[in-house]
Length: 419
Image (cartoon, rainbow, N blue to C red):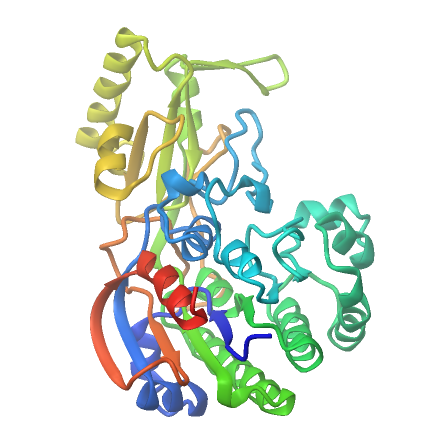
C-alpha cells in the first residue's frame, strides 16, 4: 500500500483578501509560511460551486466536464435540480485515476460525487435539499439516496447526534468535519476531498467582507486544524500533503432579475391559464451573476437575429441588468464553456439573475441588517476577489505565487500522488 496521502480541503469562496485580513489565523498561517501559496487564481466560467468542483477534480473546463453550472436546464421549473451525480461528469476524475492506481479514495460532501462508489471507497456525498425532501427529512434515507458508503453510517450518526441533521451552515460543516476526521483516523485513505461551505454561505447572507464572513474564515481555520490533527493521530502526518483551495470569489448585488418574465412579455415564452410555462422559443437559465440563454431551435436564423436585437436593446436601454453577452462559440474559445445553450449573458454590477418568470421582474433584495449586504458568484472569472491555493507537506516547497489557473490543480494532485 502506498504511503502517499493527499487531503484536499476546498473552503468554498475563500479569497486572498481573507487571508491578508486575518493573517494571524494559526493553521492557514502555518501552511502559507511553510508551504506553497498561490493567490489570484483564475477559475472557470461560470464561477459556480458545482461547476468549479467538477473542474478541480478533472482539470477540465465546464464544457468538457458537462457540469456547466450548478443546475440542470429544466425549462418551466422555477427551482431547477442541481448537478450532483458522479456519472454526470463526462471525463476522468482524480478519484478514478487514484483508484485505478490501487490507492484508497474518500470524499466527504464534495460536490458531484453522488453514487460515485465505483471509484470512491469511502463516500459521503453532498446531500441536496431535494434529497432530504425525498427522504422525508430522514438523514439516513437521504444518505442512502445519494450512495453513502454503508460503513460510514455509524460515524455520520454520531456527528448528526452531536450537531444535528439540518442542511444549513455551519451545522452541516460540523457534521462533515467530524466525519472527515473519523475517516482519516479509521481508514487512512490515500486521497480525501472535502468541502466546507460556511464562508460562502456567510458571504451570500451578509455581504463580501462582513464580520460574519470573518468569523466563518476563523471557523474554517479551526476545521483545517482539526483535520491536520486527525492525520497526526492516524500516524500518517509525515507522509501527508494538505491542499487548501477555493473555487471562486463573490461580488455584491442588490437586485434580482426574472429574465424569463421579460421573455414572456416578448411572446418568446408562453404560459398556460395557471401561469405555468406551456411553450418557449427562448429561455434563460440563471447562473446567478451570469445566465445561459437557450434557443429551442438554434438553427432558426430569424430567431437568432430577433434574440440578438432584443439583447442589444435591453443592454442599451438598461432594461434588465445585462452587462454583455457572447455566443456559445465565443464562450467555448475563451473559457472552454459550451453546451446546448446559444448565448452566455453577464450581469451588470448590482444585478443577479433568477429562473422565475413572475412579477416583479426586478426586485430589490434587502440586507438582513443595517450595514450588511449580499453577494453572489457565477460572474466572469477575471472579476473581483479570486480563489487561493495552499499546498503544505513533503511535496511542496516554500514559495508565494501571484496568479494561476484552477485547472492546473489537477496536475498538482497527480504529481503528489505519483500518478
